[in-house]
Picture (tube, rainbow, N blue to C red):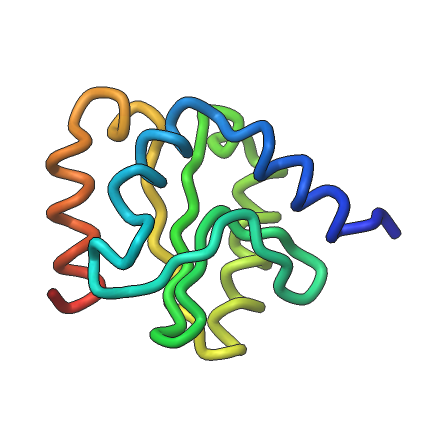
Length: 112
């Protein structure tokens, strides 16, 4: 089993451009929620999590469209939902081309 904590630390230091862009909007409780990035939950590392409100934000690239990853993401989401988390997904393309819309959608999803 991989060392998830080490992997999460590595991912925090090597965020994708889309993760950086969204992180700049959600850090410091700008949404009213305290988000953590690249956080270990069970056997998974989630992109962003607000533990208090049980909200997870995942940012997906094109690889999430292939059948294997679709099934993996379904199982992952089912597991996270079973722990009481709401999983919100955004595509890289949406973050790149419509960050304002992504932010508005996020605020609706978290009830702001």
